[in-house]
Length: 304
Length: 275
Image (tube, rainbow over all chains, first blue to last red):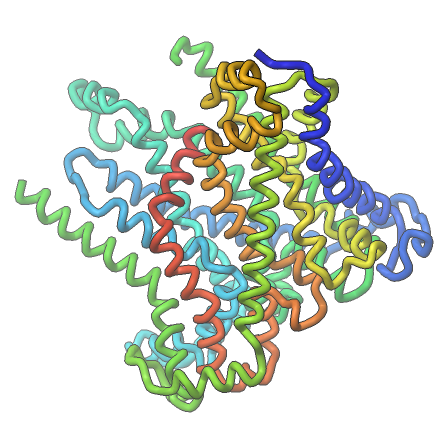
C-alpha cells in the first residue's frame, strides 16, 4: 500500500533541485545559445540573438557532415568486428557438444580492456602505432611481415580502421557477456526438438538462436550506437585532437568541443550539440520502431 | 569423439591466441616502461630492461601523477556516494508514496535517458562560469545527486524486492519514515547500490570531456587529463617515461578488476537480460 505523505517532497527535493539546475537548465541554456553568436565570454548579455542562422549553417557545413559520416563509419566497422567476435565466442561457449571450460576466466580476460581509461588507451596506441619508433611497426619488421614501416596514423583509412579496431577490442568482451546471458536464457529443449526434427547447426542458429536473441541484439545495437555517436576521447587523443589525418578522425563531439573551446564559437558549438541530439533521436526511434514491429509480429503469430 | 577432441583443441588454441592479442598492448606498455628511450628507439623487445627507476624519475620531475590519482579518486568517491544515496532516497519516495507530479518525474526520466550527456555541456560550462565554479570540482560532483538512470534501476529493484508490509509494521512500531529509509530500505537495496556503484565509479574515473572543459589548474587535474598533458609535454621526449605514466594509470585498475570481475560480469549479464 502506498501512502500520501508530504514527506515525499522532502525526499525528492535534492534530486529535483539538482536535476532542474544542473541538468535541465544547462540543456535549455545550450538551446538558447544555439540561437546566438555567443563566443563564450561575458555571459548571456553578450550573446546576440541570430535566430536559426546556426542551424542553417549546420545543414550546409561540410565539416559537420564529414564528422557525422566519420563517426558512423568508425562505429559501423567497430560494431561489425565486435559483434562477429562476440557472437562467435558466445556460440562456441554455449555449444552443448563442445562443453568448453573456463568461461569465467575467458569472459573476465576479454572484458578487461573495457574498464581501462580511454585516455590511457588512446595515448598508449598513439605511441605503439607511431611509424618511426612504435612497437607495432618494430614487431612487424622483426617478423618480416612488412619491409618498410607503415605510417598508420597518417593515412585516413588506416587511422579510422585503428579507431574501429581499438573500439572493438575494448567492447567485444562486454558484448560477449551480454550475448552469452541471452543465449543461456533460451530453453535447451528448443534445440533438442530441432535436432530430433533433423535441423542442422545453421538451421538452429538462424531459426532459434537469432530470433530468440532479437531483443538482446537490439539492446546491444541501441546502446552501442548511442555510445558510438558520442565518440570522443579515443580519436581526440590518438592524433592531434583536431581530427588528423586529413579530418578522418574528426567526430561530431570532437567538432563540438573544438568549435566551443578551441575556436570560441559557443553558439555554433551549442547548435552542433543539438544536431547530435536530433541524430541520436532519429537512430533511437528507428531502432524502437523495429522492436515494436517485431513484437507485433510475434503477437500475431500467437507465440509468447 | 576424436573429432570433437581435435575441434576442442583448435578452439582453445584460438581462444588463447585471442587472449594474447588482447593483452599484447598492455604487455608492451609494461615492458617499455622498464626500457630506456634509446632502447625503445633501437627496436622492439618482449624482455623487460632495468630503467624503471630512471623513467620514474623523469616522469616525476614533470608531472605529479599521484596527485592526478588522488584527484580522480576524490571525485569518483564523492560522485559514487552522492549518486547512490540520493538515487536511493528518490527511488524510495517514488515507490512508497503517492504525490502530485510523480508521473511528470517518471516521463522526464525516460526522455533524459536518451539525451546525450554532451547536450548540456555548453550550458553547464556557462552556469559554472556564472557561479564562479570553473576550475573547481563542484560541476563534476553535484550533478551526481540527480542521476535518472540509477533512480530508475533502484526503483525497479525496490518494486520487485521490497515488501510494503515491512514499512507498515515499521510504522506501527512508531518508526519515522527517514529512520525506516536508512534502517530498512538501504539494506534491502544494497546489492543494487553495489552494482550501480561500481559502474558509477568507473564512469567517473574515466570521465574525460567534462573535466577537460572545467578544470584549468594542473594541481586539480584528474588522471585522464594528466594523461592528455603527457602527450605534448617534455616527458614525451622520453618514451620509457611516457609508457610508465600510462602504466601507472592502467595497472591499479587491472588489479582492482581482478577482485571485482565476477561481480561486474554478473551485473552486466543481469542488466542485459532485464533491460
